[in-house]
Image (tube, rainbow, N blue to C red; front, side, top):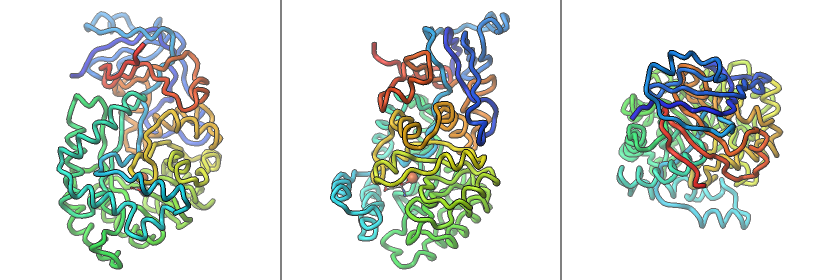
Length: 418
Ligand code: NIG
Ligand code: FE
């Protein structure tokens, strides 16, 4: 289903390179105001001003054409942190939180993640992937062309495998229209069968799950949090995962300051995510070690928590990515427009930084910056065309979807109705 396509008459705005942009570099975007993008077999062969495109490239292939009408073209968005495969929903829990319950108190009395685990254990692979497709369609409408999906609602070998299998099916299905990347999150919570025996559950993950899911998941993640998996267990599990070839990630310093950021730096994780309560030392060490800080403002918003210190990370020279954290509990939203609005309005990120965070740095958080995240020759033909010709409209349309066309691997996967 790979395609040859020419996208013409666009204002190309893109970060460049095949690794994360750090600190001040996040503001450096390349602009081509008479932009032309040539995609051959799903891969970008040229992105630049029309007058600079070699004539032979245009003559060499047959193309389909998209006229951008002078609008902005960005790299397709990368949502590098989601939990979009799950059973059931938790609306009642959300209402309890509105009345004053906290996320952790609900979890401690057996609700929260465990209640989604109970529902997910009842689901077949087909149930899970069918439900996830709905979210993937909505994401594609919002310009997402690469999405990460985590397991973590099985917490036993069989259900974790079914979740990862559902993710694999979605990744291999060309009708989905997004690149789907899989992360194993067996250490998302301690399941009721292991209550009070956290370290034994970690042993079980290391002995039974990590070896079984090699090849089925690219990354391994953990909810490193007080009273969930603390630093020692997190270090043990992530080291074992790294040795087995997984790229590693952490949910770090989300609810309290625990040192997850420092651990991410020590272990050379691809990313540490959330970081609402990161210490200054954690910020500094992550910047030094080149660990991507993946910030999830929708979760802070939905939990009524303070936003992660994006400016501290950028000023320390770290790479910041933004993602949605779509999940049935702490953040039942995959809204890219609202993520952009919160990042710009409440986290003090500039529009340019926000674009880099949602494209190239998101790709870097998945170890994919060499293949996605910018509009440059050699990258996958993933493009989002917006409704306007100026990137300052992006946060200005607060929470509204302004995507006109989403192109994935050269194929138009979404066109906004007129
Ligand atoms: O990223 N904090 C841990 N995991 C998810 C929430 C999962 C859930 O509540 O179902 C998060 O916020
Ligand atoms: Fe998460």
